[in-house]
Image (cartoon, rainbow, N blue to C red; front, side, top):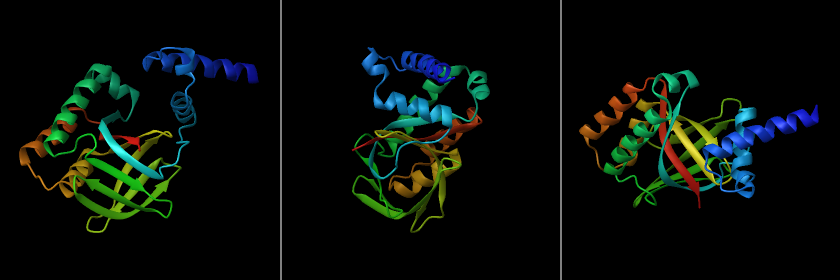
Length: 198
């Protein structure tokens, strides 16, 4: 039985490793790949959110594999991610400009450029979601995909729009409409931020 599980995990690692363009067996068995596999199999995050996480790009996730296939697979996801990155850049949300710091006492800070906004958060391990409560904004739920060095915060499109307008001093109706129409184009898609641990 244990041998069977080992070989199943090994095959999954090979398949996932080929998708992430692993260069060697060492790359294949690196900590992030192993964590991603455990997260995929168990449906739970194995890493802690505590720490400072910097924006590294946009993140997109389809709520089901069927939706991903119906929307044209990875090509559609790549196109949507590129469009989202472009729109986030218009709000000044670029690499190094946006960061989230999650503290062990359930407080957090979001920094965009020189603006700092704090609040509290609560993480529900059973759903894999975090609720962010800013001082002047009603709580926003986000799905969390987390390893020890990378984290995606994924929102329903309307909640992402609320968060962007709250964080950014630059408010562009055209950009907001573009993000909104992007989400409507791919019903069942979650949008958000890809973050790297500092």
